Amino acid sequence: GAGVSQSPRYKVAKRGQDVALRCDPISGHVSLFWYQQALGQGPEFLTYFQNEAQLDKSGLPSDRFFAERPEGSVSTLKIQRTQQEDSAVYLCASSPGGGIENEQFFGPGTRLTVL
Amino acid sequence: AQSVTQPDIHITVSEGASLELRCNYSYGATPYLFWYVQSPGQGLQLLLKYFSGDTLVQGIKGFEAEFKRSQSSFNLRKPSVHWSDAAEYFCAVGPSGTYKYIFGTGTRLKVLA
Image (cartoon, rainbow over all chains, first blue to last red; front, side):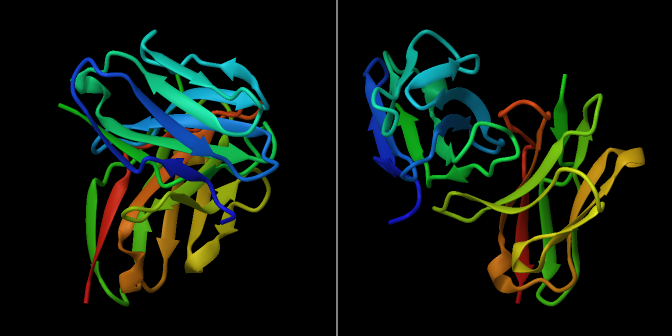
């Protein structure tokens, strides 16, 4: 398909487990974003990549959150020692360029539930 | 700090009725403004955006939005709602020269047959 894909779509983790969420952006898109969407809230920015470089990780809530995009394509968001407050939908978006004027195309999200 | 307010958490309209979803932003200059729609199980889809120029912006699916600088608002409108418009709608702002969206908390639209 031509859109952004994310896997898994649903993830249930026990508190303390590590999880890895995958994002496949649109081919050729330079920019990749991760957002966290808590229940009843709008998405909140987590981190931004331009190609393989992580240019902004100011939104990551703690050092348990780590993101990478080693080859400038697929990205993984890893959460270590998950906590209940990590339960949310994690959205990935890609964009052909880096500026705000470029449309961000969103994936369907991964719903993480931490028990 | 920049912020976006969507004062209506839920809105219910009858099919065929007109719709207006409110969005107010707080920012020192005119930011880039966006409306996205999120259907269940789907990703966010861009409806329309405003950067500059004509303050009435046309989008997809028959939606339009009007930028009013004096009111710091960017309200979304549709003259006649279809049942398929039932979804959650998010207003977002993005300061020029950056890449980050700041989203509102969303308005959930229910359409009555």
